[in-house]
Length: 313
Image 1 (tube, helix red, strand yellow):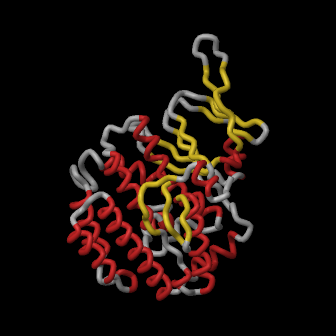
Image 2 (tube, rainbow, N blue to C red):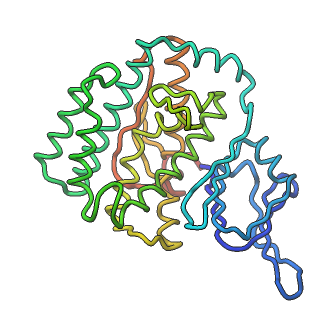
Image 3 (cartoon, rainbow, N blue to C red):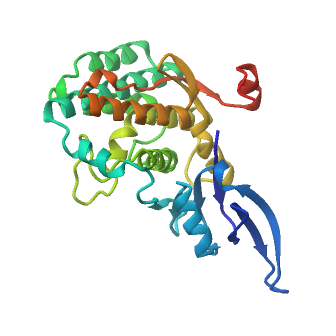
């Protein structure tokens, strides 16, 4: 697995030998101390969470070439921007042509599969958190009623029932769990954006989302089946606003949560790549059944012991 690197304190970031060099500046001597060096090939996403972080242009350029996404946080320490590489795939133009030419029936069927996966994962998250079995069954029932393009509009009532039962405090938009949910979603969103760009997609052109004001419509389509992992983590760990550095570390680690996809168990970081690649095949072959969606299992996370047991290391 690659790393999600979070920088929260005043630091200077530079490049050396194709590695991210993290230095701490001394305000008195004006010297600096190297704190860490990380190969760019080991990095998935970099999160910048301090206005006192500086980066060299050489580092920014090399991170773009390496396909690394940089997520920026604002004064409130909540994500407010993404920096994505351009043209990260050798067949970018060809892939975009396929993407722009998706016929409406295929687009509708793809969105149906995404919505069904999202609702089933919500039901599973509620079940794992000890939710009422009747409500869990009702939410699963919404998934069974999803038609092409969700024209029966099952996604919204499923979400309403789900969050009412899932969150012990407040609502999805208001209350002490709203900010933790937003932060966790933003971490996964950044990873999906990185993956989508590396696969050559035009992220502003979505399957279902189509806002002219949203530069990440496709990413906001693709994130839907993964959201329940964040929900379950926030509720299980009782993560509340205001977020502490420890809370943010837990939320950043959500990309290590194991999900089931294509008959295998893998961390979200890998599942995103499988999902993105299957979307590519589904569009090229014009077959929505080729789209592989992730299934929530629980909150077990990828670890060295787990990888060793499977012969990965």
